Amino acid sequence: MSLADSTKTEALGRLDELPRARLGHAPTPIDAMPNLGARLGRARLYVKRDDCTGLAFGGNKVRQLEFYLGEAVARNADTVLITGAVQSNFVRLAAAAARKLAMDCHIQLEERVPKTDPLYRNSGNVLLDRILGATLHSYAHGEDEAGADRRIREIAAELEAEGRRPYVIPLAPGHAPLGALGYVVAAREIVAQMEADSLAIDEVVVASGSGNTHAGLLFGFRALGCPVTVTGICVRRPAEPQRERIVSRCREIAELLGVKPMVEDGDIRLLDDVLAPGYGQLNAPTIEAIETAARTEALILDPIYTGKAMAGFIRRARQAGPGRSLLFVHTGGTPALFAYGTALAEALSGETADGETAGGEMAGGETAGG
Image 1 (spheres, rainbow, N blue to C red):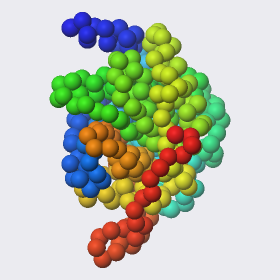
Image 2 (image 1 turned 90 degrees about the vertical axis):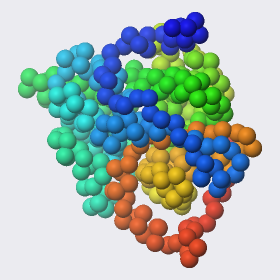
Image 3 (image 1 turned 90 degrees about the horizontal axis):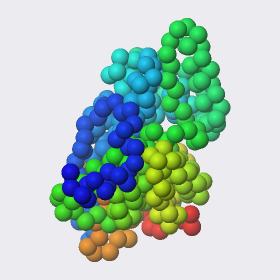
Image 4 (image 1 turned 180 degrees about the vertical axis):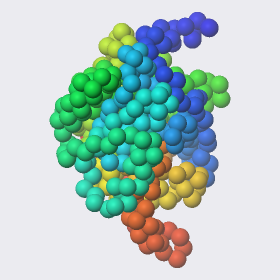
């Protein structure tokens, strides 16, 4: 190990000492997107293919689960419990990770999206949850993280009374951000790829929801001395409350790793202008982004996370000057696409004769919260 590599390792503190269950394929590739770049302007565009992490359709949650499940194994757990939205990628991958490690999984599905479409409730990730043999529970509220955590712990207590050894992955903030460590690792991986391939990335764009992926990347880059801008595209809540979450997550990562805080307030960049009408709900920029990514680079995106993140990425690419390089983090979520099949089919059938969507061009710009 070189002196530079040693210094970088020390900056990440206890990262490599914490329990970790190796579940995914890594490193995932960084691919150029010349067709999309030619359509949008003069910036050089790349994609980090974290949809290719392997496990059960892959996605960013595989990296996060390596640290949660590492702790579960260290505690000799035999059952994993987790809460998420009906079409949550996290719960699907928690069930898959549990099966790989010979554990059971209980999933609590919260009512976060106002959809009663049978396709939404039975296809996509829900179908995979069932195929993986997870036990499904329902929680009637979608914006009550503390209440959902209380209920999932009650289920865990019931299992413990039956002689099981449950491990709960919490939903609300205020716990050790083990999942974020997966993206501290990913930041190290990206920096190594940039150095190996002489890539000068100016800006990384990623969906910002729970905050674990966004905060982990940002903390990792700063700990490694990498000044790249990290732009989070809000997919769950507006920019200001999301900023508070990212600030907290970065502070908690530092505490968990036993290192000094690495992220300054000015490092946290959030855009929420493609969020409306809310989490898991389609809008014109997202539909256009899904279509554009597929028809230029054969990238398949989902309506909840990567479609909205790509809508934000497209806006950033259009605003970027010549010679700038932008990296889109494809966090997966492919199965959720099929749960929105009816709405997407209707939207895509509204094309004009020249193949452009009826919605037209997307407006650019940022919100004051960015």
